[in-house]
Structure formats: C-alpha cells, structure tokens
Image (cartoon, rainbow, N blue to C red; front, side, top):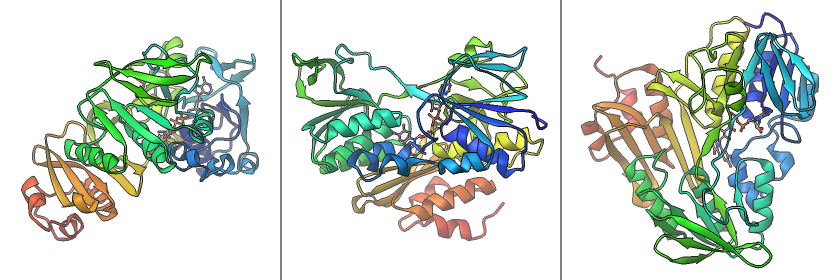
Length: 415
Ligand code: FAD
C-alpha cells in the first residue's frame, strides 16, 4: 500500500486516468501524478474507430473528464513528457525532460501500440495504424476524400473502420490472413455472421489472403496493394489493424518480470512490491479463465483501476467482475460476456438472419461466455450468471428452439 506517499502513474490513457480518479474516490489524500506522452487531457479511444472518423464526435467530446477535474482533485498531469527510466532501488521515475519523480507506489498503465505492418511500402503516405487521437485524425482527414479504402486485418478495429468507411461512401476491402474474421475474439458462427453482414453492406471481405506489398505514386502516396496470388487492389487509404503489442519496455529495462505484458498477481502487483501494472499492458490471473491473460478493453482498464486503487489504499479489492467487451459495426451492437477463448462447443439462440441472436460458448458442459448481437438481455443474463457461479444452461438446453437465457437464469436451478 502507498500509505499516503506519492503515487506516480505512467500512461495517461483509460487505465491511468481511472486509477487516479479511483484513488481520489477512495479518499486517498497523497500526491497523485499522471505521466503522459500524448498532448491534451486523457481521452477514450472507442469512438476513434467509430463516430470520430466521420465527424460525429469532435476531439473535445472524447475527454474522459473535463480538464478542471484533475485540478480540482489534486491530480498532476505532466503533459507530453514520457517516462524513460525506473530506478527501483531509489523509487524514482525519470521523464524524458530529465524531471525526476519520487514514488511510494508506481503504477504502469502504458497500454499497447499497433503491431508494425511487415510489408514493403508500409511507410507510404496514406498507410496508417489506429491507436491514438493523432492516428484517428490522420485517418479522418484522408477518409474525407478516399475512394478506395483497404483494411488489413479483420479484427475489432479493422471491422469497425471498415463499417465506418462504408458509411462514409468509400469502396472498402478487408484482407484477413486467417480463415475467419475476429478469430481471436469470437466464435466461428459469429465470424461467419460478421463476414456475411459486411458483405451485405458492400465490403469486399477476403479471408485467408495476405497483402504482400503496397505501391505508391511518384509523390509517395499509396495507390495499390498487391495480394498473394498477384491480384492488385486499388487503395488510397490503408488502415492496418493487425493487433497490438503491450508497452512493457520500461518495465523490462527495470528488470520486472514481463512476457507479452507486465506480469502481475491478483492484486496487480509486479515482481516489485512497489510497482503495479493495469490495463492493456498487464498480464494478470482471472477467476474466469485458466492461466494469466491480457485483455484490451475499456471494461478491463476500469476494473483494474478500481482494484489497484483499493490495494494502494490498503483496502480489500472488490471481487473480480466478469470481463465484457463491446463493438459497434453499422447498426450491430456486439457484446461479449466472459472469456470465450478455448471454448469447444457453441449453441445459437435467436435468429442471425434477423440480426438478433446470441452464440453461447461452452467449455465441455460449462457456459464460459456469450456473444450477443442486438440481444442485450442475453449479455446481462450471462454476466449475472457467471458472476453468481450458479450452474448455467447445458448446451442441449440452449439448443432448444425458443430458448431464453434470461428466463433460464430466473427459474430456480438444481445445485
Ligand atoms: P491506453 O488507453 O492505450 O493508454 C496508455 C497510455 O500510456 C497512452 O496514452 C500511451 O501513449 C501512454 N504511454 C505509453 N508509454 C508511456 C511512457 N513511457 N510514458 C508516458 N506515457 C506512456 N475497448 C472497448 O472495450 N470497446 C471498444 O469499443 C473499443 N474500441 C476501441 C477503438 C480503438 C480505435 C482503440 C485503439 C481501442 C479500442 N478499445 C475498445 C480498447 C480500449 O481503448 C483500450 O483497452 C484502453 O484504452 C486501454 O487503456 P490503457 O490505459 O491500458 O491503454
């Protein structure tokens, strides 16, 4: 616990800002400093692949809290001055400007960065990744007059960008190297539904295909993508959404245990008792999945922030909540409750053709999560069910016509 000594948080993103706020909510009165490497106050990233790209949200509308909040709550924002070194013995953090910040507790909330595109031509103008507000503004500027948009990677971000670009009238191609869309995040039936829906909306979805090179014009602006097999696809805006890498070099250089993320225990403590990690950069144990996981979601960032604040205040952290995620593509609201990775059986409830259904995911006979499209009641029922630890429906129950998860969870279950 920080026992009133200074808490320094590295990374002024979702997890960092929520940690600072959660400390004050718990009555922590010591100094709190939020070290950032982006201009402006902390903001939320979800709109960056959605409404922001079409001008539906302005930068000011992204802020997590008004700037006065930090002032009024005694939270110091360093502005754009990244942390460059942790001195663990001296409990001191050095920033790029040379400024040194002593800490009683250090919280790493450094997030993740886009995986670089390993393709010739990746440096051409018009080839962009999407993580920050600066990235999104560059994409938005180009989208305004782009005719042919190529999305590399059929994951959350790629598909959200594809949907937004279609809405803005561009011709859109999605190239996914794997055999199905969003394979890391959703079940095979959900992948198939999403591919069908994007195609209905006029997106050309190519599965099991790779971009081998990007070619530009004399001005160095991307014009064409070459695919395996030799096909050439026009592309004046390319958005690469091929996954992220956790930012853990600061932790690794300080000798903390890392491995696809900063390794932490259930109290979000790293291998150093005074250093914690939260959000996208942290790999943590969860009661809802075997082993340690690293999640990339707002919900996870907020949950970690609340837990670490409790630990730093010497309080018992709240029980871990069921992880959940969401995505918006066209008029579809996809919600995922639970950790569905590693499921071996699925059951579909509702009607995919009507765009309202859920895929229940099972490991053996046990429900581990539900993916819902425009069926929020199934999503909420799954969260409650997993949280309660009560036995869920068996696959055979869920496969019965007319099965209703909410009604199921309300009827008494044999223990
Ligand atoms: P971040 O928000 O990335 O913040 C980390 C911050 O640390 C960054 O500002 C980074 O620049 C900074 N930093 C890194 N190193 C240093 C350093 N050495 N010194 C100082 N600062 C440093 N999640 C959902 O649940 N639903 C969605 O619909 C959704 N949509 C998304 C759309 C987009 C386009 C993106 C990019 C993400 C989306 N996410 C969504 C994911 C969600 O935004 C992230 O999970 C969340 O932002 C994680 O918070 P974080 O604080 O861990 O990381």
